[in-house]
Image 1 (spheres, one colour):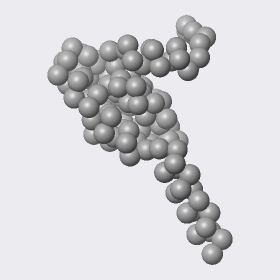
Image 2 (cartoon, helix red, strand yellow; image 1 turned 45 degrees about the vertical axis):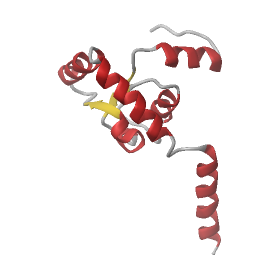
Image 3 (spheres, one colour; image 1 turned 90 degrees about the horizontal axis):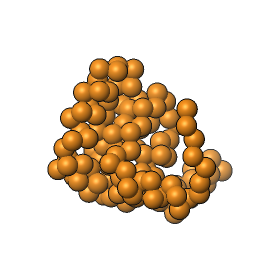
Image 4 (cartoon, one colour; image 1 turned 135 degrees about the vertical axis):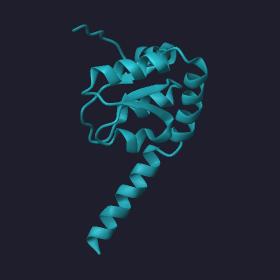
Length: 117
C-alpha cells in the first residue's frame, strides 16, 4: 500500500486533476469522501453500499464492490466516456449544493430541540 503525506491544498489538487474518484467502500456511515470529491468537480464512480447512494444520488456511477467483474465493467465503461464524466461533474455540483455545514448544524439543532420537548 502506498500513502502520500500532504495537506488540504494537496488533496484539493488531487481531486481537481483526477480523471475520477473511485470509491469501493463496503460500508459508510455518511459518505464524506464522495461528497468532498464532488465539491472539487471530480466525477464519482463508487460502491452501491451503505449510505453512499443516498449521499451521491444521481451524481455518480455505481458498482457492486464485491464483484470484481462488475467493478471492471463499470470502470471500463465510465473512465473512457468523457461526455459521461463531464455530466457527472455537473450533477455532482448540483448534488453538492444539497449539503452544507450550515444545513447540518440547523438540522442537528432541530433534532436536539425535538428531543428536549
